[in-house]
Length: 226
Image (tube, rainbow, N blue to C red):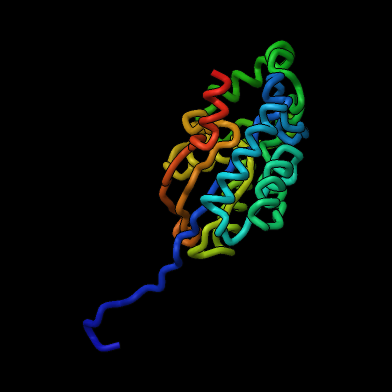
């Protein structure tokens, strides 16, 4: 290279990540705190997943791969999508919801009655130190979410990838994407069977939110319910 010539840096193309939150579950309806606790889809969730799968096949069937959490609710959602798109889901345990330890699987009113101090700690924590006894700390969960997103993106530079996972995973990643503490995840909630798209560069550790919590594909069902 001659003196004064511009230096060129090789850039890695961003990966387009289509985050899919699982459809409504029996535990969602019952207001049960299910992290690693398995729960099947509710009848409404089954209706959601049919519409979701049709939409993903039509609009995103060209995706290079389909990843999913291995829990029942995400597995069912991913299988419905894969049945139409032709993808065989790749299950990654790092895509699981946060492990809530002693409160995992309890109804919310049971958590309030037996472990009110933990809810206070969860809601007031503004750093990554909070943890669920017998489960994960927020720091551990954040590290896991970042690890799996980076791993998937690095395996598919410049490609479009579908990732079926949980609300906590998606909202926590969105908080990190916006340089906010993980405790800010409640500001980034997404609904069941919704789509969130992020263009992510794992090498640079940065990305762009393209859309969040899009559930327009459920509009007909929502209108019928109304």
